[in-house]
Length: 428
Image 1 (tube, one colour):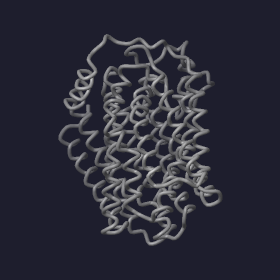
Image 2: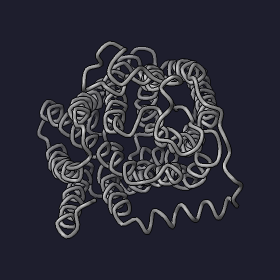
Image 3: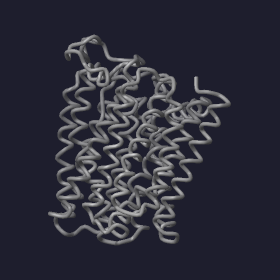
């Protein structure tokens, strides 16, 4: 799902174009939901609510389909790799597009292509002709689409609202994402057991119509291209800026480690649900839904904050809690204990991600926003393929429990290292 484009470097759209007055109508917007004062952000969230449920249904159904066809930890990891490697490989081009062209139009195109991808996967599965190479190829295609979609969405949050409402908008967006994580996997678990994976893919395709409709309904200023600059010069300038900005660089490094530490639990979830706890696809849906419940709570609590100061400490505490929860899940004695641990994982992971996102967006000027948020997407999504392949390969040798446990250790070490760096030099 995506959002609008503003003309040049402003922090927010004019009131007469985009939003209700800051004090109120939409009535008196509750403090925790204050970003909903902005019309374009309300449209954005409306489209997200519908589409993300379908997206999570497809994610769970695709993992289960690969598992059902192969029963291979390595191929589960390979499916994740194919779905996310393009975000890493093409992410810089996506960020470049977000800074050079109308983000609004770019995202309409990416959402339309994502809809077509879901329908093709549904047709292959419902017809009974789907093979593993189909799934891997289509996952790779979706990853390429997301490489352009994600920087545009991330870069536009501040422009759909205002700088003052940035942390609230990012937190509410994360809350919607994770509310869908609660609903989507549960529905997918039931539907996969009842009618198969293809129905989940078809429902996801239909859900994109809501996203596209909300995008078209946004009232946006006309996009004004900036003075032409060589694409290569524009791209290298963005990398150079991020590298020399020490605070941005260390937040990105911490999130890269957090991504790698979390991949074993995500990739191997079907094994825990079926091989270890013998709960099948419904058990997988319950585990993913429990994680989403914790994430919604965590991001809504974060949405109540009004200041960016202190978010670095939130990242540290969240990382420590995440690592501890991964270890508890890795060596859980029962399905119900794991079900109790999953909300803690969702709570801490999404608070860390939302805090990092807000911190970076507060530190950077708008002219570098697309390229810098592409680097953020590369760390939180694009590095996932390497973690997924490593998780699948390691699980084949050491077992699922040990692999997830090692992820927990990495999360603890990265959070402790980031805390040490903050003691030496706090983020401004």
